[in-house]
Image 1 (cartoon, helix red, strand yellow):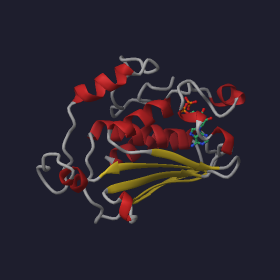
Image 2 (cartoon, rainbow, N blue to C red; image 1 turned 120 degrees about the horizontal axis):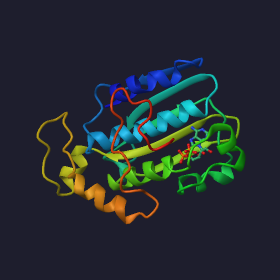
Image 3 (cartoon, protein in one colour; image 1 turned 90 degrees about the vertical axis):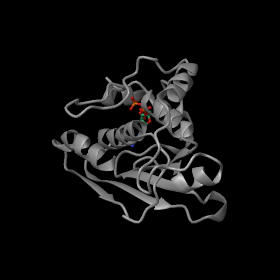
Image 4 (cartoon, protein in one colour; image 1 turned 120 degrees about the vertical axis):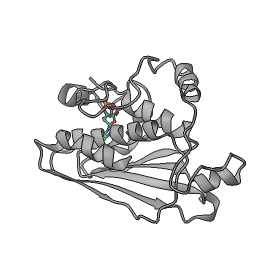
Length: 202
Ligand code: ADP
């Protein structure tokens, strides 16, 4: 999934002095996620990272959470060296139609919907998303997705194979997305190769 996202994101950085880097440990556990939705989450976060970074590096990393209480989750981080987000806006940016400040839409465009959709998708998987950032000091978007092993442990049916995540039925997402009035039900599901943008952000 990450390879696809990185490939899709290459055109976004083509005109900027930015390097896209991923470092994933091949020993990471399989996760319980819908591939298309996970791709959409990553594409939104990498897309934002590119959009708000003039130069530098964007990295995507993942690790198993060591903490006992949180065991069974994979933590994925998209980090950039961009404009950053002031602390007092860390919560608001996940709301629909909200941007870090009034100058953002003038300078960068966007609708303020991407992170609201992304948060929704992460939570539908049973994960959480948070931000670590300061104005001018880059941004780290960090989200968790349950591992396949965790879902098996808490009573979900076992996965077909060690590296293949089970697909969650699409209706589950549709129902939940439609329950959120801020998310248009016609929102495109995922980026297709060749699309410049998945369509969430004009
Ligand atoms: P949009 O990008 O369409 O404005 P999002 O919901 O994706 O909407 O993001 C909301 C706001 O959060 C953005 O307008 C921007 O102010 C801030 N933001 C999101 N990601 C980043 C990032 N990587 N660096 C700096 N600011 C960000």
